[in-house]
Amino acid sequence: PPLTVILANAELLQNGGQSEADRARFAGNILTMSRQMRGLVENLLDLARVDAGLPETALEPVDLSRLVSDALLPFEPIFFEQGLTLESEIEEGILVQGSALHLRQVLDILLDNARKYSAPQGRVSAGIRRTGNRSCRMWVSNPGEDISGEDLKKIFKRFCRLDQARPRGGCGLGLAIAQGIVEAHGGKIWAESSGGVNTFFVRLERLKASSDTQ
Image 1 (cartoon, helix red, strand yellow):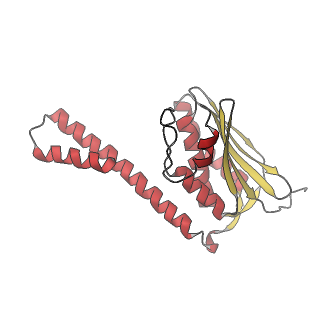
Image 2 (tube, rainbow, N blue to C red):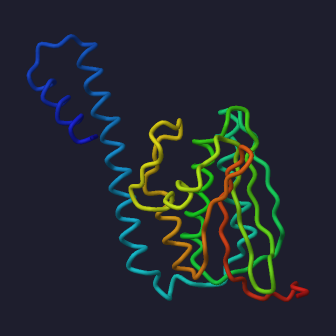
Image 3 (tube, one colour):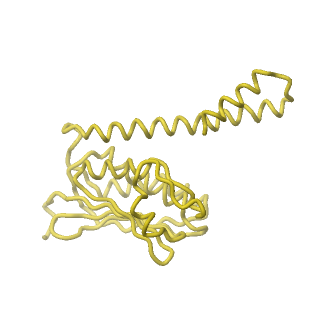
């Protein structure tokens, strides 16, 4: 656990007698684990906020098409550095009632998840389109090892651990936070896996805009 590593390295530094290289290594370990702890605490706080529900004042008409487009921009150089290709398919003018800040967080979580688990040199796809009479669907898809049906059922659970024999390892709180946000918007989030492609979907009710023909 991060806290155990932090304490062990701090005690070694306090005892003294190490070389400069060892002291630098111990300090580096403390910094790395402290960042992990900070991330865990921030995620727990996000979960607590989602559990408390979204305040009505946070809900307003959101151009989800533009939000998806804006969310992709900062990830493009990150994907490029990892040798990944990021593609998009965005239907314009899709509006929903919600919190732009929280919906952006959902996209960030799904895109970061795709970055972490995409197959090398893979093509990641993200987008949004109208579906049905008054709904829309966002998705983020990446090539990678198939996720079993059993794991698909629990992947959004808090502190879930996937099959340890898989390179994917485990998952933290990100997907649980995404699920909480989506459900707070009256929507649904789920994952599908087939043929070496893993896709995360988000379905939300959309606001009827003047440009709608349905």
